[in-house]
Image 1 (cartoon, rainbow, N blue to C red):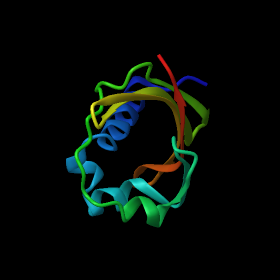
Image 2: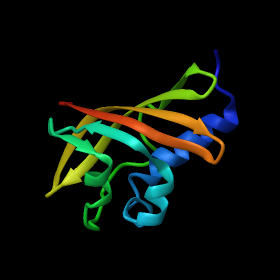
Image 3: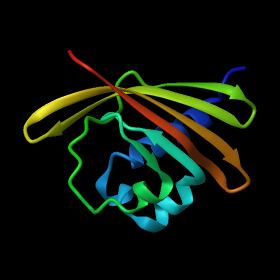
Image 4: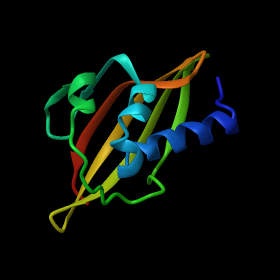
Length: 122
């Protein structure tokens, strides 16, 4: 099953919204994007629930965009797995992680159901 170019572009844009402070900390936008049953295995090893993600205070995000090694595959007609690498500067140090997200297509658009970040060294 192959993803069409339009959905691929939409999913790439949605993932990038999560790395841009103006959209990432817009509570209304995140309420649209993050599914009620969302959870995350964070890069730190911590487990986050939807309410944890929505409660994070605004902060600068210094991430490399477009997202490196961005790929999408359909798991079924309404479920997509997105993978990419993140490179984010924290206190002057760039930290890398392999990322994986599961998105579900709903009547109102794609929603994020799951995310995982696994650190790696360059």
